[in-house]
Image: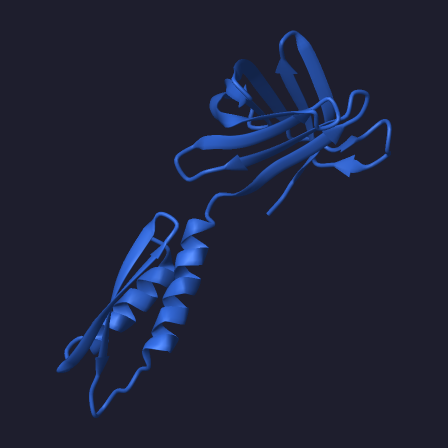
Length: 172
């Protein structure tokens, strides 16, 4: 559990020892938090402050899926946005043919070689089609040949017998 959310919940628990209580339930994305708002003569906390703090903590917890790598190439124009989730899967969006095809799905880590290469495999969806994709990320400095842009990883996307190569960047 996220330490910020845990701290808010512990603070709320400390106030529940008093008499006057009201319960508020907040649901945000996949998270549900029950708040017991207690007021006493010694401690007075308005529920708006508590709700705001809990919403901030929930937002922080639910955004644990962060951008991981992005890469784009030209001729033909393509783009990948790869995220890493806490369960080890990688939600991905690949745009091919200058954005005419947008493939989405989840890739799984297949293997890692020498600590600098990650190989991801899976099926992605576009309209009613499913297609095998593999993404190979090699953590190394690279320069995009067409644009001269720098990247901190070389990225190869393979699908349907075609390889797309570019420089990628870690996004935090």
